[in-house]
Length: 220
Image (cartoon, rainbow, N blue to C red):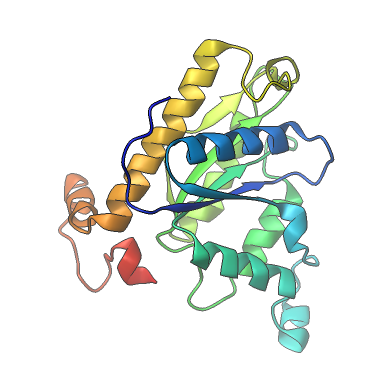
C-alpha cells in the first residue's frame, strides 16, 4: 500500500461492541492499521471506554452529563475524524452506542457538528451489518456530522477475519483499504484546504453562508 504525503491528521477509531473478541473490534483494529499505513495517527477505543447510564433528563438535571460522555467529547475534539465499527442489533444500532451519542449530544456546542465520520461493520450474516449502519447515520447526520457516503460492511465476517491482520478475501481487503484511504483524502481536504468546504456546498446547488458553513478548523 502506497503512503501519500499528507498534512497531519488524527483519527479516533471506535468499536461499538462491548464483547471480548468482537468481530467489529477486529475490524476496527484493521482500520487503525490502514490509517497508520496511509500516514496518519489513529487511536483505538471501545464504547466500553465511555460508560454512561441510560439517558434520563432528570439525571442530567440533577447530576449533569456523566464523565463517560465528557471523555468521549474530549476525544472527539482531539481528532480530525471518527471511524466507527458498529455491530448490527436487530437491524439497527446497538443501544449502548446510541445512548452514548445521546448523552454526548447534550454538550454545547455539541461535538458532532461538522465532524467527519466513516461507518464500517462486520457481521456473520450475509448482509454484513449494513442495515445497522444506515440506522446509525440518522442520529449522526441529524447532529451535523459529515458521514462519508461509502460505508463498508463485511459479510460472513467470522470466516473473513482470519487473525492474520487482513481480510481473507483480497478483493474485499483492497476495497476496505481504498474506502479508508478515500475517506482520509476527504478529511485532509476539509481540514487543510478551506476552499473545499465552500466548493462542496456549491456542488449541492446552494450558496455558502459564512455564518453557517465553516471549515473543520474554524469549527474548533
